[in-house]
Image (cartoon, rainbow over all chains, first blue to last red):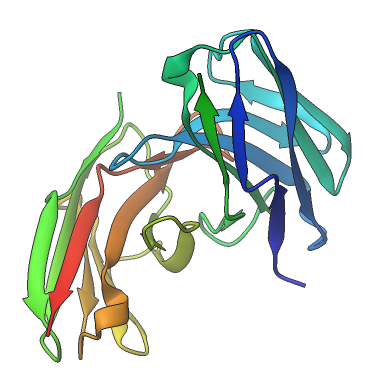
Length: 114
Length: 111
């Protein structure tokens, strides 16, 4: 299984809502990532988990809260988002010390904040 | 800081060969990768060069010159399905698992 799955595919939420994005992989990867991508821009790293511990937080606002319940799952909890947070949210996984820079990406969650 | 520059758009016809360039500035270097992303899809790993020279994988090849801080992705026998965005990427010198992506090149293949 070389797939990273993400749910939901699409999400529309108001600025006062609380929602969660979910990501799962069964490749045995111990590094997992959240990226944010705006249209026509490269993916922008938000968080990295290594061995289920948060290793990188790219100064992301606290309205985004990551969680790694186990080595296969990664969540991103959303609260009090702003319209400018509307974007494609990508999850990825990789070996911690892997070949080159090979990361496996999920299909993303298209988030719209009203 | 670290930065990777790519042309924003490239257009080519089916069956042709196209080269997508990437120039980078990094404080340390651990190899150059390439990713493909179709519109609305996930980025997909294409290739990785740690050493100078050409790496070939089917219709796609990737080249690296560390002395010039330069690499390129070469796509041969272009097909319509190759229309996508292509990103080069390097590993951050201070963090093993952090990728820095290039600005991205949108390739349009025309019939």
